[in-house]
Length: 260
Image 1 (spheres, rainbow, N blue to C red):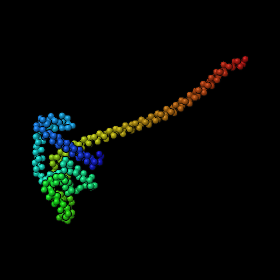
Image 2: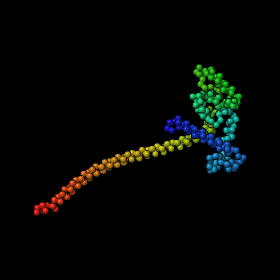
Image 3: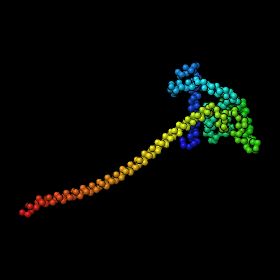
Image 4: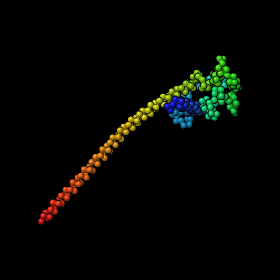
């Protein structure tokens, strides 16, 4: 998690999962005839309290206005993609695993706008793709430098391919939400990282203290062993003195008989 590209990938994946989950919740909400009826049927794995909050959110004027604008924006598009719920980076990664290399911008346009079962999303998408392939065969710009697939897509598709992910675009409502969620998640990750760092420092300090305690215990053990050796030696000396004293006493008790 300390590597930037891993952190970005994890953050992006979590944001995508969050947005997909919220979309599924709204789709479930719209299945019912009235909001009151929808409230009685919480989406799977969501508590009633959280579901009530989501229902309030879906019924708010702010959310309804956002939905209306999104619908209007989609109507203005020249064509829609056939990529399904999988994000464009997801399609790109899926293709990379299949062929062993990253697809370029033109190839990704084909992947996300053409389906073997359904064909092209519309005639305009097919026309633009064929035009881009023609330009790819003669990729020469005005200054004589080769045109990259990205530049070709920019020239042909322009704003009709939103969310492509290869070129900068004006921030959409979804991107602003993604950015906000990413910032919140980044804050949580940073907070947890600080807590982990603090815990690690405390553990290191505890280990250091334990090391010192172990050294002191070893020193006490050594001193105790030395003291025990001295005590044993003194005990041996006392035992010898006691044996000598016993012999002297025995001698004095037997000496008078020896004199007579």
